[in-house]
Length: 147
Image 1 (cartoon, rainbow, N blue to C red):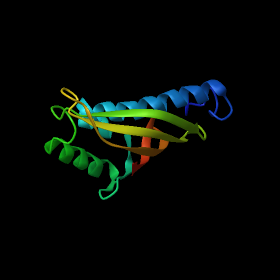
Image 2 (image 1 turned 120 degrees about the vertical axis):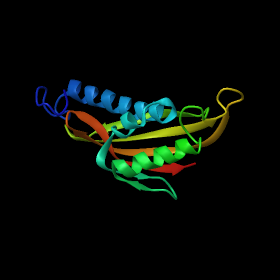
Image 3 (image 1 turned 60 degrees about the horizontal axis):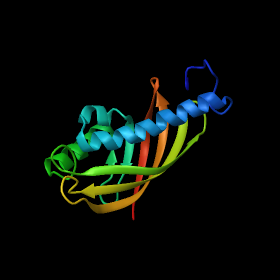
């Protein structure tokens, strides 16, 4: 397992590298799922305590601020249960640097009106810096590019 020393650093062990990559891919997917219909405490737990969420015009710093932004988007029905929206993540590429550091790039599509006539509202690119902390991979920095 990555970060435990049992298999060595992912850079030296192909199985540990694959395990780390799959865990990171699942973090990215869980963030999207939880943004759409999950518990916000679980959502924010997938970020490090000091995470940066870089969105054009609305950057957030730290878990508490990221949580505040998610609550704001839900209160406005931009995302979350009842908003009829979906985040679709695709073309994910993960680069595991070592047992505690990785980066991932992915494309995202944001759909509205998913229960009637789905409309692609926005799309872009995520660049995630990921750290292995307390036995789990978490996003330390998410840079969001539109378009």
